[in-house]
Length: 113
Length: 110
Image (cartoon, rainbow over the protein chains, first blue to last red):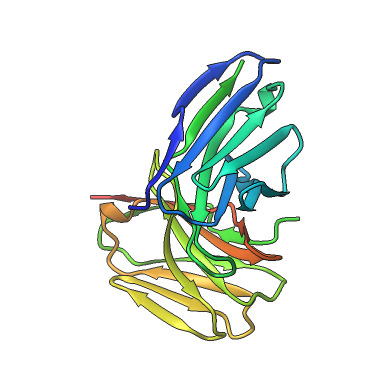
């Protein structure tokens, strides 16, 4: 299994509070991604990173920011959580672009009350 | 508009039955991937198909990429309870980002 961990694995928070999710990899892969998974929508890309300090927006980036100061860590921040951000968040990594395999972490279940 | 349409959305079958799930689009793709996701875990890549008409087999799973590279199918022979899960197709969009279909939830009972 690819060395990807996500923390926390579960979190319950209140509307308006800031939340940071962490993805940590031990594979030294260049590319890292954040997805959210919701019933009826499948997996949707939030942001991705193609190197340290290099990030770009995905399909559903509004309300989210990311940072990558080290190869191994990719942080997803919800500046002011809303109930619509209740979801399961997955981090993924890949060594190269294109058809290269993406390896997914175990996910973080976030509930915003 | 959903780029990838997967059907059926849900499938519940008995052990030993055969099944086919589909991934369709009006767009042409250079490649397509199939993932399986088990409850409480992240998706895991099963296969990547890159050539129109290509057929790949993974034990009891057979994957086919359409001749026009707009669609794909996954056929499972003699399904087992261990095949239970969410099956997702995905394509690369503009570089490294994956676009996923909504998936087919398969339940195989013994």
